[in-house]
Image 1 (cartoon, rainbow, N blue to C red):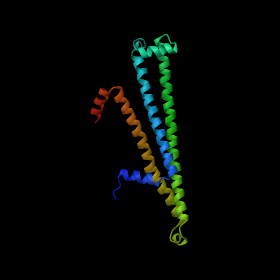
Image 2: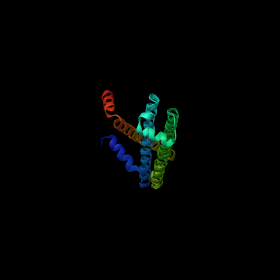
Image 3: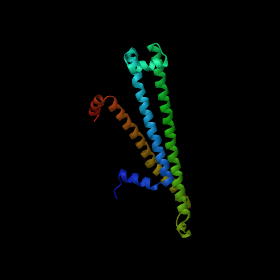
Image 4: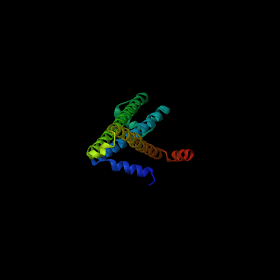
Length: 192
């Protein structure tokens, strides 16, 4: 049977126990939240840059004027400071959550490596005594550790990274099309 990415993905999912699948789904939810926060961080830069380019936009734009009045800010320079501070806070929160998401991904992959190794060792321990007579127990332990490490490090972790980056890229592209579909279409056409 030919090894395609879909077959590899299905094999990885088949290796997971129900509790591990639940943890994987929770990790996917964390990845989605992280991607949404990344989009919020990128989107928060746009109003700040617009205000930097035209500080009088506070008086021209109805929504910005309402926010300025709600905050009790009288000058456009003070309002620019608050918008910059809010942008900074959103970016820092996005980066902190991204660090948490990366920690969760690494923890998941290392725990998965441990759990698969444990299942293999238990499977070896339940073998008949005659099965062990022709095998070196040190080689069995080395094989378990190296093979499972290879499967998780070269299969599961890159899959997690692929999903994370794909979700982030898809949401960022969607945001670009929502903000300015014409420019996003032109850029997409040039890049392809």
